[in-house]
Image (tube, rainbow, N blue to C red):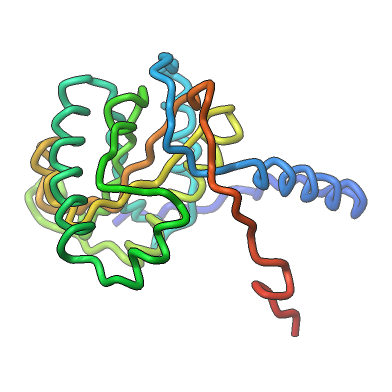
Length: 221
């Protein structure tokens, strides 16, 4: 195995007041991010989606194995298949599998088993986690911290899409095995979630919710 070697770190240091302002600016931008369920069908440039995926691909990960794959779906017929399969699972969840306390917690958000955004939004980015890597010679190579690595990359993808000016929604039908079949993905990959993205509908609304204050989410020791 060839050693990767090392290169100088490219690091930009800022004065403390500039650092605080940059952090505050990012906080303000992220506080505007909301999960959107009402999308416009306005087209989104493919290059924009590609750039955001590249940003996600810079995420830290176990042993630099980069155990993720992103399938950006814009084809109408494929989106229709995904919606039909997702709604079948969601309907079974809402009507049969979900415990009542879970349904009670979801009620204020107004969600149902119906997911029209899966067809309306211009892009569905299916995030897949690679349990292991298949090498060109047919052997396999183990991946490490797969869920953690893919979770971090997904967060960076959502941030990149929001920063670019798009609305997003994370969608996690359970189970999600149908995604691998529809997209004809190899058996070393498992669906992690769907990031729905595009422009919000002109009349889009979101639940009036708040986030926990700093004292509830952080402890400084």
